[in-house]
Structures are given as structure tokens and as C-alpha cells.
Length: 346
Image (cartoon, rainbow, N blue to C red; front, top):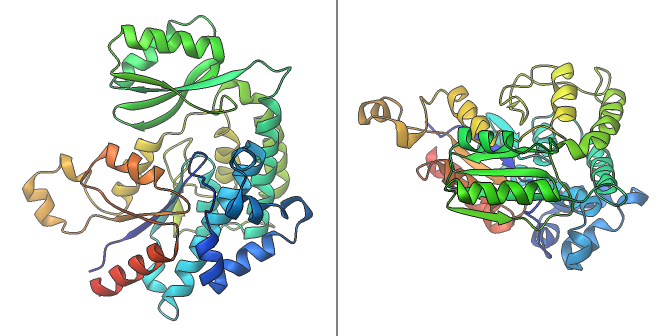
């Protein structure tokens, strides 16, 4: 029996100049996706930025969010095109996305159409960029490696300034803190004193998933209330989407609206999302945590496919468990590899 497919979609930091060009040139379906996106005056510049840069403009938050989403949707279209008359080759059992990627996950699940997806991420990027600019306080993010979650939570509690918190729970030993620059720098110092193996300040323009994003959250909440309605959205039972904010299934339109709103300021519970996806697939747990007897009873763990630019999620998945089956599809080579693998499993 073939492995169950789980499509996962990347967020910010996965971008690079040249992303999507191969897909655009060699896949009619991918090209059609990008061409339709550029019918919007507000997004006409996206192909040029994706394919040719410059990097400084591509990485700007209001540009990079629609750009990454566009390339993810192109990759998804190319996979479906390659599956042809055998859609089972490329039909996921479930979907999830890391932060921004959750919008592409809902699109892959059939919950929202490309046009609405691009509208939502365009405003998301615009508003997050605006609230990270002066006169608002400067934000920062730091990656902390080699500490347990409880220790990181205690560390955050030591800082009187409440404008810092956990933004990402990526794997058992990697956490991202986000908030006002001074508070984040203080947290980094405390973490090193408490025994962290490494702390790395991230090259970001804002404090994503922190209280500093509250005004962006409010604006997105209003937009989502208007756009994520039963008239415009149909949340499918399968493939289902597991949300960052809850690490659980999005069961209806109300869930979808709330989780997409909450994720602007709440932590990305990526490790918990991965564990939940594995559980829902019927596999008993992370491969490294299973006994030989358990492995023999369940011969096929799910296959995670990172759909979109870069290999950031593949790296995070290996940080959770090196024995997880993960591949990425960011170009035509990845598309062909996935389809050939699925055919061989038949």
C-alpha cells in the first residue's frame, strides 16, 4: 500500500531569487497559476521579483508573502498536472503550512480558491510590514537551540517586558522568541546563561507571532470575517488541514477564520502539528520513538512533501525526527521525483 501523502507548505525565509522560474517555463499548469495571479494590478510585480529579484525587494514582507504563496501554488499545480488522469498519485491525506504556508495548505485542501488566497496573503504581508515600521517599536526574533520548552517558558517569564514571547516551537530543541528588540536581546543573554547551546538573532524586519503584531491581527480578523464565510468557503473533511495555532484539525469555517486570525500573534506549534498529522494518518508515533514491534505492525509511515520554495521545512522535520520520510517539490525535478516514487509504490 502506498504511503499516505501529507503536503506541507513553507513560510517566510524560504524565498530565493529564481524561485518558480523552472516551474513557469516547463509546466503549463504552473504558468497558468502565475499568469492569473498577475491579472491583479497589486500583484503584477510578483513574477519579476520571484524570477529575477532584486533580493532586497523580494525579501520585504509585503512582497515575499504573496511571492512564496504564488510559487507554492505553482508547485502544487505542476504536481497535479504531472499526475494527469491518475490524481491518486498526488492527492494528499492532509495538509499543513508553517505560518504563511497555512494559506497555501487551505488552498491545496480545496477550502479556498487561488484568487482569494492571494488576496488574503497580500493584505497579511502589507499589514505585517506596516506594523513593523517606525514609529512602532523595533522588533526582533532569536532562535534558541539546546533548551527544553519548559526552560524557555521560564526564561520568558523572567523578563518583565511582556512584549516578548515564544513565536515558534519548531522541534524539541529549537524555539524562536519574538518581540521588542531590547527584550529579545535580553532573552538571548538569559538563554546562554541558562545553558542554551546556541542563540542566533534572525535577519527579519519584524517581530512575527508576537504581541507587536496585534494591530495586524485585528485588521486580518476583520478581513477574514468578510472573506471566510460559508458563502465563499467550504472546509472539506479530507484532505483536512491542521492549524498552527491549535495543532488540530480545522473542522469548519468558524475554525478556519479563528485559527488564521490567531496565528498572527500566537506561536507556530510546528512540532505538535507534525505529531498530530502522524497520529491522524494512523501511524502510532514518531519513527524514532517506536519499538521494533510497533514498526513491524505499521510498515508505512506517511510521506511529508514540502510543496514550495526551499527546503526549510525539510530541515525542521529532520530536527523533529531524522527518520521521518520527507521530500520537497520546488521545481520540475521535484515534481518528477514525487510522481515516479508514487508510481513505483503501486
